[in-house]
Image 1 (tube, helix red, strand yellow):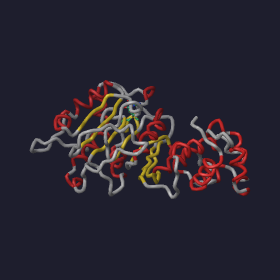
Image 2: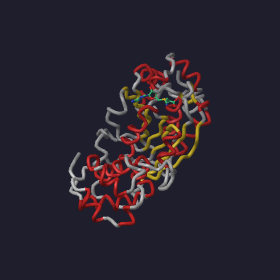
Image 3: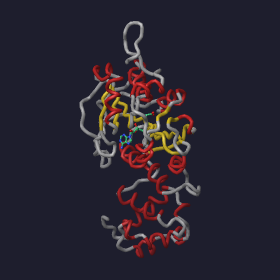
Image 4: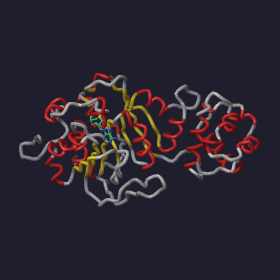
Length: 322
Ligand SMILES: C[S@@+](CC[C@H](N)C(=O)[O-])C[C@H]1O[C@@H](n2cnc3c(N)ncnc32)[C@H](O)[C@@H]1O
């Protein structure tokens, strides 16, 4: 059921979300994380939140549903204006955290959609049959927590909220620009700064990989069926952090450990969480740490302070893998 221009070319970017849902024939089931965006204005805006210099030669969408966002992303991928500088040869899949990116052939312009619900995956292939035939669209029927990601250059997705955290932390280490919708409360925690009540492990871990910002709040009414809470769109622009960590896995584990004791002092948090951080000798870390820092609460430490403390902990605390 492809929309076509006068010269018979398929047209993307203006499909009516309600009509798509009707054509799909399967009702969105909130018990399967299916809350479809039905507000055209929000749908139109989502791709525009990618950073201006984002390489959109291979866009990834997670959770295509009935295809309202897929349609907008096909318009983005199809737009000739975006061809400039959209080479895919320089996609790197190296680095310890990008190992779930599958090797894939270099493509000109492409959208890959991962959808767990096989009925919706089949509908997407049918609805966008022209794009599939042209090699522009690739629908992967599978669980985004399990399937290898294709070698994408940018990701835009209205995430399934039940697994949004796990998916975000599969995406962030790939160091690609991301535009993702989350429950608003989760988004607030992602972007929080040291000293704010929402600041925690999620903030430090997300901001380790990217500059994260809320670019739009979405009311429940923009979805069908409506979720219980408000949503927010988060843009993640990859960049190196302002600090250096030698052992990323230990740093993230140490941050997680200390935030399990967020109301304790740093001194007690280090002492009480060796079983989580993997420190065999937390007392030696306490002995090597500045007294003023030890008196603070983890929620007051900015990411650079966590990185410095983690380096000290690694040096003095005999960490082992946990
Ligand atoms: C919030 S809906 C978004 C649908 C559509 N993109 C939109 O914006 O209207 C999330 C979609 O993710 C799918 N989904 C749920 N869990 C998934 C998973 N683990 N992996 C891939 N897709 C999943 C659901 O079937 C649903 O289609």
